[in-house]
Length: 119
Image (cartoon, rainbow, N blue to C red; front, side, top):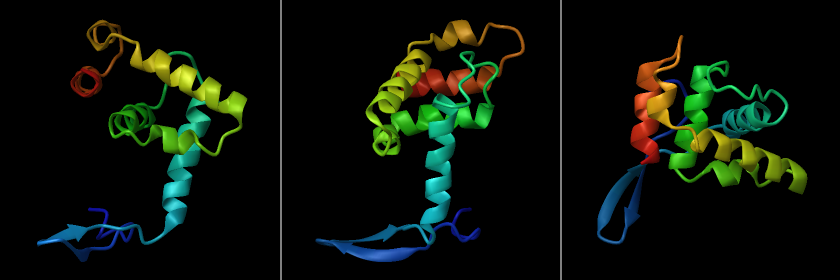
């Protein structure tokens, strides 16, 4: 897990009546590298075909969107880069996972997860 790998730590925080376990980052560099990878995937390394994209990166983009943190990743971009990045993510989000999973050499599990997160 990410705590064992040293990416996160475990802390207890008191929220009113409840003690909650939180997992803050130990090193912000890892987060910055992930943000950079996502930015590059939709800008410099855009392939215009989700089946040719790295599957882990494609999943990361969909999950970041579903978690509502993708806009934060694009916030430091210049206006035209931001517009292009959001346009390309919108292209991905507009794909029909049921159609995409029927294409040759595809990962049906990935598209099933995308369908679950985008409905």
